[in-house]
Image 1: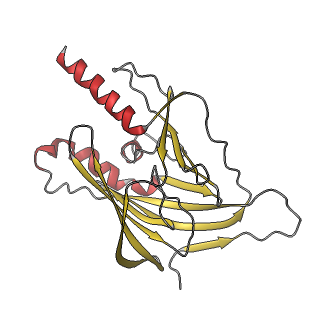
Image 2 (image 1 turned 90 degrees about the horizontal axis):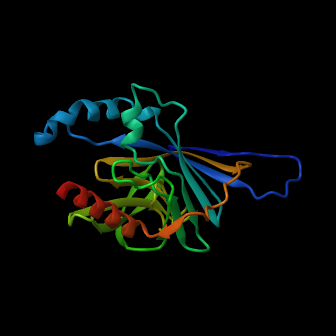
Amino acid sequence: MKHILIIFHLFTSLCFAQKTNTAYYNINYLFDTENSGAASRFNPYLSDAKKYETDVELQLIFTKETAYFEMSENNQNSENKMAFILCGCEKPVYTNATKKTIKYYNKGSRPMQIPEDHYLLVNDLFSSWELQDEQKEINGFTTYKAVKNITTVDGKNQTVIAWYAPELPYPYGPSVYGGLPGLIVQLQEKEKMFVLAKLEFDKDTPIPAEPTKGEVMTAEAYKKMEYETYLNMSRR
């Protein structure tokens, strides 16, 4: 028996609009504030993020062809804002399985004079995953492990670990991740973890049209530009 709530919406009237599905994710922060060393001055902020992580609402609306991931800010207030900020999900993410693309706008930076939403960041949906044989049960689903190794713009290595469920044949996941042979049920990126909490099928929730405006750039190229701008400012 699944330990996750799956809801099918029944309808009696004939409907020609394509039905959508929704996956709801929780964010879990894995900060170790007891052994944070030099970063101890940030402990109050990290503790606040952990304390209010349940206030963060994340949802992925999807069909076979497209998906839209967003974070609701309805619950955000002055006390829990750090939980929302550290999630890093301020910008909606548009995925097109047919075009094999993931799109989202840049956040922008006033100090670096980078305007918000000026760049439309486009990534390859099916890229860089290493599929592994390891499997485990998560919320009643048999999931398989996939790993993505990333080198950041400052030369550091970062590993993203995803667990996907082939019985849910949708190549989507939380935040900017997808491209696996099954819906991502759990994903760990640094010290935050996304976990699938609930599924709803056959809904009438529309998926917004994917964006077309803005200067197109890969996310990697944008991060390099942002980092170089920061270094140039530091040298002044």
